[in-house]
Length: 264
Image 1 (cartoon, one colour):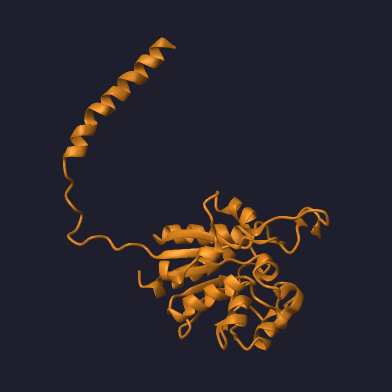
Image 2: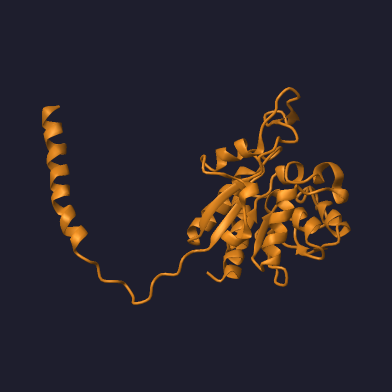
């Protein structure tokens, strides 16, 4: 054990001996121009869990693609109670249990999360909303009220702020209903408009989107639709029953287009 401590100590001493040399020697730049800063993206979550919050695989895929794209991400969620809590082993509500959307979203954010009330479009280049039923239960009442749904006031404010500022908005899975409700005449996709033997189990959402006054555009699960006029980018994600990598690819297409629209 004494020999191990001596070896570790000698290596630490050797490393510290080189530190002043590296610190005092300026490095030549790789090129003359400074690197462009990455896009500042706000990620808005709705809890933690597909049936009562954010779909975790979608949130993770968005974060991976944003990281690869060099974006700076800040995560937000509203500080409100969930509509209900679902036991994901049974697919049924736990009647006696209550949870908070911000607290649950912090699980995905690894604790680094901010109240949605503090999100301002002035501080970000884009906003992205993953899916999961939390978008239809906590960020809006779409799960209960369909085309007559209401959108949470801060979600509506954020969507309108980014839209007015001409900054891109990305949404996936069921989340495009938020844009359809708030941004009149917007173009979005939730995939196909027929169930096709169960491959698209939530295909009826397309009709609800049309009833909200938006245009629905048919797209495959690995594709993203870009509404150039409104700078809204959407992809079906788990609206389709398919392999996970196809969903990951579609979310990647959405994130790529959002970052392109940021111009960074």
